[in-house]
Image (cartoon, rainbow, N blue to C red; front, side, top):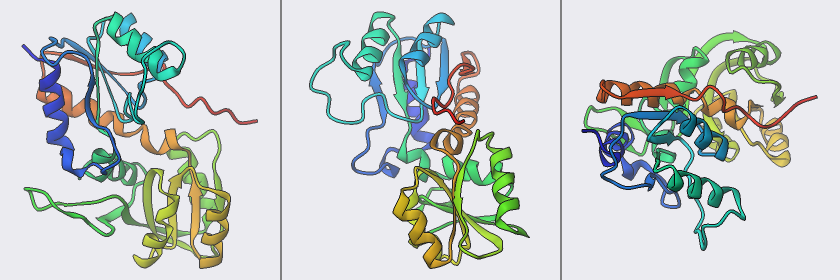
Length: 263
């Protein structure tokens, strides 16, 4: 029998708990440890729509990248989105677990997958925090090489590869050759990308001043969307769990998508 605790342990094999940032919340966040798991829905977020999709397909658990509970929760009611999701999961006896910044940092995690989707070559870790048991470096940003091209061409390539409805970018005046990637909110890692000799950084949630500062420093900066830069990791989560537990069903959400719309 596969339990929710077994799934949590498998997630830590992929992305060890100590890889997570101190402020983060990872692991089994809702449900009974000994709950038997026969079917899992994998998605980027534990939103109520994802919980409902899981219930519709008879899933016993959702596994996501973003945590169900992130900030301290003083109450669980239907007055807020997090409370609604927790109540729904409890009502349907479903568990919820996640791998967040530990999966960002892990070898083969969010940022390795992002580099892979963007077809970067000779990928390494910028400012590694350490090495794992296999001798692989782990840390947040990845850097890799691409065929030299102008920024407009590369931005269009990123948009196509990540299925972005749109993206924002500034031109730092450099030909794109050496690209840093950081899924999600890594706009404040521009300095690390510059120290590593990168001409371009692909990330998301970039602030107004971060765009200006990057341009002034000679760094091409692309905001390709939080959902779009991180959602590819769902394939990694699903593949890992399916390999570890071949007798259970692991399904990637077909309904969850970026709620941001573009005109």
